[in-house]
Length: 412
Image 1 (cartoon, one colour):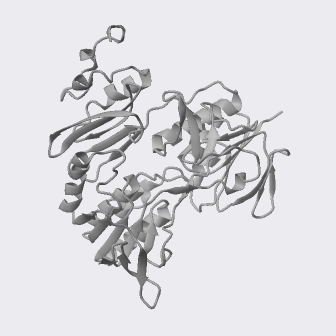
Image 2 (image 1 turned 45 degrees about the vertical axis):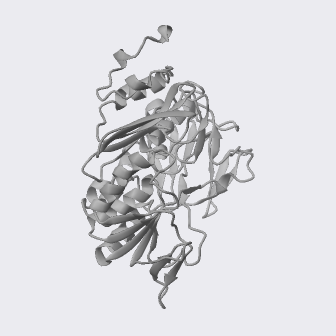
Image 3 (image 1 turned 120 degrees about the vertical axis):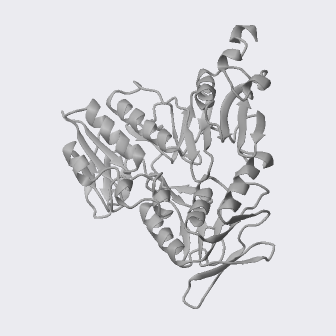
């Protein structure tokens, strides 16, 4: 009897799962459902489009023919309003009922809106979809001043867009440094200087108390909790994601700031899997549950989920993620879980070169490299091997780090 697989979500996790399912189950029925109006596109490259560096064409990864060639049914502009886990069915907004043998939920998240007055004003943008990128690009090309909110990896994309489009921008941060949970002030200052070089001024101890608007409802300024007012033609907000798990409410699928899955991407409910941003997965390297929203991680999760949907517990998600920033004259890369750990080691080598490793129980669990990315492979390998190296910090921070210089594990 032909197996039926339904995937909710056509981001990289859902699309990767569809591709792997077709490889692993050549005769299966596969359906991908998404509420977006276009097939998979590159979320990494949409920032380059918004910066004015790329046309739309290279952003798309799959067109509808990609799904047709693989005999995968793609349903665009379709919203799932109900899941019946006992009956193994889903219901769409058009009241169509679809049966499934195995279900994958890969619905991702929706940008969190600032809980302040006028946060939904015209010209206040979030940056997540291709449509968001189009709107931001239009605002950046027509405006002169902007305000950016959210001192993390997505916020700096908005800052870079402003810089590339010649916008005079203020980057409002609540703390005293960009991404302060992963970088020291010394490391973050490298990023602050790079922002200033492109016309983006970091403002520390700030944030947004409320937005002001004109008579037409368009944003005109952000006022921070200190009472300081920053005029703007548009604003970019990147303060996190709300996971799209509404369809799982009341189903019994366990959640804890995300959908809980094991190392096989399976939820606590038989035949129901999850992958991508919305998962809180069991990280076999950390030995605990963790989250990671990188593109590579989501792609691997989708593929692992698909393999286990076909052959339960046949594949394990064991992954060291990476996230790179290429907006400035030097490269930036984070890997693993740089905001976790009980210890750390860092070193600044020059005005544009810095490293920090996060350690837990003497093992590398994440890190940040600025300027020289050469050691990344060695650090990631040590992390995956779960090797205890916390007692050799001087060796770890050698400019030309060579893992062979570390004492053998049995001699530590």
